[in-house]
Image: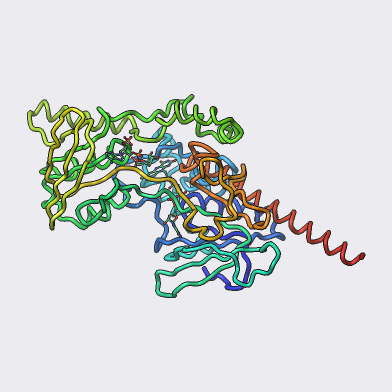
Length: 447
Ligand code: FDA
Ligand code: NAP
């Protein structure tokens, strides 16, 4: 897309994953209803093209939400951006229904997102990383009307600046490696899995290990076991065994749009109860089907008396020693007082992610943003950072609001409703601003 340097956009979106795509949809649907009052929006994405966790698009992995929790349906069941609309246009609606499964493959959901993106492509610029948000250099003494967003182009076009009355930060989860262990060509985080795996000659992967007991770890362990029939595959798991992700109906209510209000307006004790009782809906847990798949493979090996799938339970990694293509992992097991060593050709850390944190992007602007007693950003119900009154620009977070809005903050479950709430807030704040300006002008004319 072509952005105009001097224009002030109503919204600049940072990142173009499903959250900000959903916001683009909500804004577009608003525009369709009120064509005379367009909202101007520009999105910047650092990847060269649209991609949703591409490095984890493993064969047969499935979504962890119903297909109805797409970019739009929960906000607008009539949306042309729904998963059902995609199926209809792809000629697969009847077969999908016959499949009788709420959970499409991640491959199919990715295709759906690509299909939706094709209708939104004029709003997004790829290979463009946002490096800072700052006050305009020429800002006068009053409260600034807009902020400047600094965008670095990977295509060699240097850095440019766009002006924004509102910013929607949606830069996603941040891969987490254990302290002091960098990733390299033999040591990978799960977020880079397929890219790094595809660079290897599979015949040279005779021993591989996967660290972690979450969904990513279990899926990668199953993948490596199936793809490398000659290899020893070790699963280094901190627990005694994989624990199941609770997606039963009552527990799943924590992801309902109404749970956001219960969490947001609840007390500290309410919020603590959400986490205490329901963390196992998402963190360090694995879908039942994947657990059973792995156990079946392990049991078949027992029957054949030929083991190459090894579960090292109650075990964590103490150290990784690297030299050329050699990797030695020092393990600490709670079942053994002595450390053990394991030599591998590739080591995958499926050790999870940190939540989105906007402090670095905000730079100097962060001093306008208020924090709670625990030092976390305060966030309005409409996902806007609470700022001092001398920063009236809206800085919205799509992600990174687990402490204020609850468990669905980093997930897809609520993106349709959340982005509708963000769009409504942007639109109603614009109306308020225009009304205030009109009143001020009338007053100055009459004086
Ligand atoms: P997401 O991470 O998708 O997008 C953020 C985008 O911002 C990225 O494209 C990134 O390149 C870009 N970006 C980052 N910094 C930038 C910058 N400075 N400038 C410009 N662009 C920048 N949840 C769920 O509910 N159901 C599910 O089935 C799954 N499945 C799943 C699988 C895997 C493998 C993972 C790791 C996670 C999930 N999740 C999930 C959770 C996941 O957070 C969720 O699916 C979405 O990715 C959230 O969408 P976002 O747009 O918020 O982030
Ligand atoms: P996760 O659920 O946070 O799991 C991380 C695992 O790594 C935990 O078992 C954790 O153990 C372990 N770990 C962390 N540090 C460790 C260390 N130093 N040594 C040993 N183990 C360590 O992360 P994830 O599996 O990547 O899942 C992240 C999100 O992506 C979830 O929302 C998940 O549902 C989603 N996801 C979805 C799909 C899909 O849709 N098919 C696929 C993959 C992921 P502790 O519990 O002890 O910390």
